Length: 574
Image 1 (cartoon, rainbow, N blue to C red):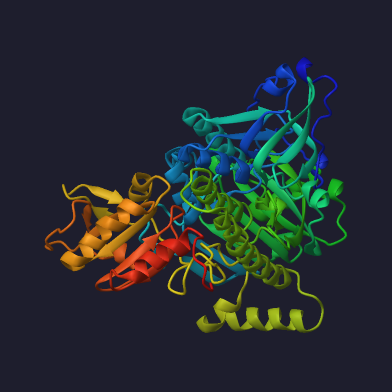
Image 2: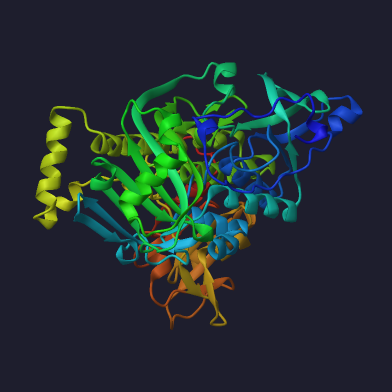
């Protein structure tokens, strides 16, 4: 351990990772820098303090830096990733990749990771289900692919690099929060470091410290939880012979005692193999390298040379916090909910949490919206958390059914799927994560709440642009897209509204339409209009997180009402 950390208690192992085997991953280490509060002896005040430099916390910090909101990030370790852990989260959805594109790290992820769209599911030796996401309308128009597989610590490292490039965020390593209080004026955190303890205060605190968050107890947060008895062993390996670059899953793998298996390729030519174990499996036993090699030999044959990069046990539980906001404190990522990994609904949900909260904090702190806008974070992201917990719990029960009706259903579904295409949709090895819709939001009307894909269009000079280009140009403001010709009166209303509200307006035209507004783009194939879920002469109000707040037809008072609602300034019903 670095001498500067003498006396500072290292981050503890969690989830059985103390039994990990293999050569492991080399993680970056970041230096401890004595905080200004220790040097000055007084508690400094900050607009936003983020606790936890994991996937959600770093995404939020990066987004705030892009919006120009200063923030402090406190992390108890001196690196990304988790002590003793493997690749951890590896599948990043199209929505997450679109967010990373806006933040400026997508190209780094694309260069390092593996794109995939094809998945196959086997029961025994029979293929019972397959899909190609590129052929599905929900995925095929975005500038980003359906999924990229990459080890989580790489993404976190890229976020750290980008935060340092943008500036404005104080990343503090080896800073562990030991106490939290809040009142009507501020939140106060007590922090311990290798150089001593200090306090700091904040307008808003975001808990992104993970599933063992101490903040839940500090604020008395209640959770709805369900502990599973499913046990898995994860093996990150390199092979001398390479399987297809596809997502392969087995429900009853003959080489794993008729239990489930997952197989994915990640960056660096490393394959992630997840083996379902017996419920009473000893984590130390199943993680022994010789036991894992026997398992790999049964799957890939004795002639396949294997390098074990990392192997370790994994157990999951399902839980969801009942309120994602407690006064000045916001829960995010695994601190807010924990789901089983099926369908890539864990880390991706935390990324979406961060994207949702970032623009709202920026709008409030920069005076573009009232503080009531922040209430919608819970409304929207708690609904998403509940959806993801429900979906992953269903998959968990399919993969490890209870005796009785659940097992009878799975046996029947697999038998039918072997013979009839209609039954293949019943085979549930993980419903792949999508951008969750918002149906309970007070800041979206009934026509809004849907995600907008990062589709392409033409700039006036004929070059290609994307939705993210427009959102970056809007710079944290709402974006009103007006499709077709709203008429002279409509254009005048739009100009007046843009002068009064935090709003950017763009006219969207067909290939030969005459422009009536200076800010206009062309949508020759109708992809932009389709992405906004509107048709014909219409408008769509798009938020900075690429969600539709509202749509309509006429440029009239409904637009003004939609803008007010989207900013949390609407007094009516949701």
